[in-house]
Amino acid sequence: MENLLTRITINPNICHGKPTIRNMRYPVEMILDLLSAGMTAQEIITDYPAIENDDIQACLLFASRLTKIKSIHSVVA
Image (tube, rainbow, N blue to C red; front, top):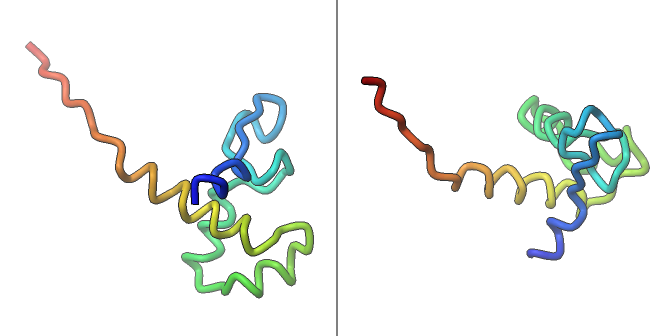
């Protein structure tokens, strides 16, 4: 599974540094938006042939990992 995360890249020269798939101009957030809108992985791959099933799985894993980040609460005095 950790190997899937290598498909997610962050490059300041691509999509303003947003996480993308394999340094291509496919932001992780776009794939997540398409999935949340009801598209299947196969429909996404059909519409974007450069994307592979493992790329979609990597996006889901990346998003899952982000939800595990603990929040930091600061106290305003």
